[in-house]
Length: 267
Image (cartoon, rainbow, N blue to C red):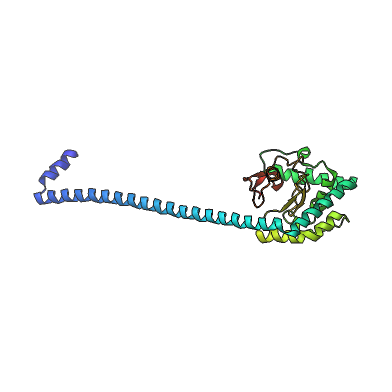
C-alpha cells in the first residue's frame, strides 16, 4: 500500500506535488497556531479566574474586618452602658438568692428535666457528633442551675433557637423579675446585631447568670461546670486574669457543645 502511494506521488505533476507540500505545511502551521491559541486562551482563563477569586477574597476579608471593627466598637459601648452594668448586678443577685434559698426540683420536675437531657438533648447531640456524650458529663450538678434550666429551657414553650422570646418564667423568683425587666432590652441587641447569643458572666463565680438564647450552658459555671474546658470558658478566664480596659477579646473558632457541637467564636 505504501509503494502504491509512492508511485502515485511520483506520477503527479510538479505543480500538484508543490501544492500538496504547501497544503501539508499549512495544516501543520494551523495545528501549531491552534494549539498556541488554545494554550493562550487557557492561560488567560486561568488568570481571569485567579484575579476574580483574589478580588472576592479581598472583598470578603474587608467585610470580615469591617464586621469585627463594628462589633468591637459596639461591645466597648455596651460594657459601659449603665443598663448592662445594672443587669449584671441584678442577675448576679437573683442567682445568689436562688442558691441561698437552696431551691430544688420536685420529683415530677426532676423527671421532666432528666427526660429532656436523656431523650431529647443527648440523642440530638450524638447524632451530629463524632464524640458520644453521656448524661453524667452534661447534666448540671447544682440545684439552682437545674431550676433555671427547667423554667427557661425545658418548660419554655418556644422552640429551640427561639427560647429568648420568654421574658418571665412566672415562678415568682427575684431572678425572673430581673429577667422580665432586662430580657427585652438584651434580646433587641442580639436581634439588631445578628449575634448568636449574648452572655452575662459573673467574674467571681464564672456563672453564666444570663444567656439570651438559653442553650444548655445557661446558668452553668465556667469554672467548675460541664463546659469549664470550652472556648467560652477560656475566653472568660483570659479576660478576668488579664483585664485591659477598652480591649475586646476574641476566641478562635472551635466546636462548642451547647451549640449542638457546631463551631463558634466568642467576643
